[in-house]
Length: 285
Image (cartoon, rainbow, N blue to C red):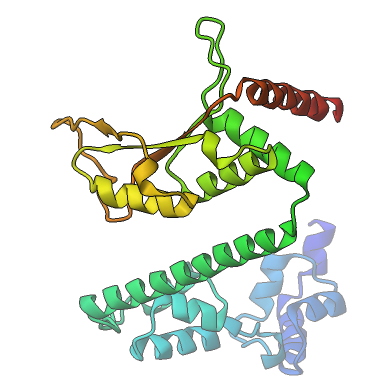
């Protein structure tokens, strides 16, 4: 007989002690330490049939959550709402309430679509307001322009939109075309800064033949502050039936072409200033 077998030979005696301790409210660990029984199988046999004391039972914390989840589900709550309310996972919620009937939708399809459209409208309105505010602040930050700043702005504008001299086509003269009234206004202010007098300006409208040519000429003449009768014959763009035009609204006024006579010297100044701007920007690296 081994020492361990000998130690536990009086099973009935140990059992009597173990049961007494169990009924006193001791846990298995406490009974083990008190009786020096370290064999778990034997220890469970000694207290077999004796319920554990209440204080050793683990609280089932999720029972309350489960009951609450089922209650909310019966009230028509979705998994998302229950999760936000209780802070538990959707998988747990699904397990707890899967035997309950699926709640009726809170909204009809038309109501749901209307709510979604209203939400999108609010989002677009907020974004539009953000755009307007950004532009307003940027506009206000500019302030008044000095002659030097206006000169540089005009040089950059002309280099982007004006006709330029090419080695294969000599064209040292200021020849500008654009459809944006604000661009035209700035260009005319730049020409005035350069000392270009009105008698050196020639205007012509370039526009689709199907548009209102007379109305376009009247608009550009008023913008430029000149008599429309002085405009040169308009350049009419022929309509290609295979092309779908998008610039057909009433606001379409074609482009205004502005040609400055005796402007070779001004063109050279403009081009030289442009390359000076480029070099100065590169020196800041």
